[in-house]
Length: 133
Image (cartoon, rainbow, N blue to C red; front, side):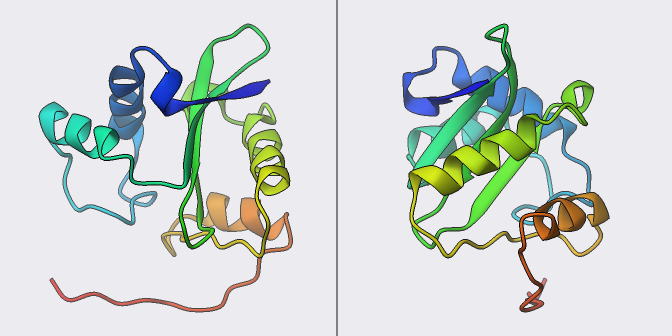
């Protein structure tokens, strides 16, 4: 498994959009509705993260994405058909080895799978954040 920068990955916009389309309401924290493909492409080209990578499996196929923000927040999403194969765990280990911690993970409180995943790395619950509509 390896990580390739989104900036250097041909067709990243399409793949990232397909991954975004798989995101459930319980997984989302950053937006309430699906953006248009054009808005999505604008976001990707804005280079919003400190590091943003495509996760490739041992056959070179994209299985997900991982990013780290300037505040050391890690975000990860794996395609549904690649869940449970260890790609997420390995990708987080690589990111945590590339950057100096401590690290954060913003997780929807309804997303128990992600909460348990990050707790497995020793992450602890520190806050709930509320937003007005």
